Image (tube, rainbow over all chains, first blue to last red):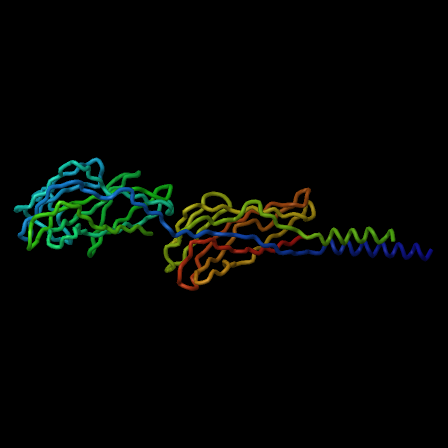
Length: 224
Length: 150
């Protein structure tokens, strides 16, 4: 009898404690690993060099006299001779005309080596985001002979060759040109650079160019 | 002795710990942070595309997370509370990120197996502490959530 009473009381106690436990609010914590990956790098590749090919050239000693070739960045436009009377913008740097007349200067393409525009590919950037392209205003092309005249690359300009294609407008400030280009849905674009290569406008020693390759470096920067 | 066994079973079932399993990792994507001069955010909602503002540019969109809560009592409501804000694990000489809000349900109901699915979206903000900018690496934020149940 006593045993049964004890059993009933114990059973009630267990059931009651279970009921109390089930009504109690419990809490636990858990942790979720959330991440973000930063990638500030832009892949910028030069595909082709800017090359005016083989040319015949002669400088003119007086200041302000030159001749030149113009290679448009737009691949649909061919290489042609600079017309100083009609192409004054091609030989204007910083608001000043590099040359206003030809004098004895001569520059013609021999056509034996095809001219090529500088071609670039930008990739790995954020999609539909503005990037800036910075170019120099002018570049001097010289050879190791210090007495020979140099060439000057002016009117460096751009043409976007990936959709939407079109001219890239550079705002010239100080010695640099800066343009803004928007990336496409893949986070990139392609573009060309062209320019006008003119004979050195003023040289005191000789107007005769050496038969050699004249080179210069054009630093192009792409950034957010 | 025969009365003790059911009592122990009752205790066992009560002390079973709930678990949080990752089904889809919550990732804010690949981004570029181009300036620390402004506070910038990237948002990954529970549905729809992610977006950013300020100096954060999205390279690859992220995705909201999905987590499975298990080992709960079947057919019960559980309340979810995130602990905010959470900051990214420190990386030497780098600025960090701060999870400033999360997009998740505050209450879920468990199914017959005692499980429930928890989606998580949110907003991440730049947190300039060093002024050194950001490295090209992955930053981690550990979101602690409190799960209450009866």
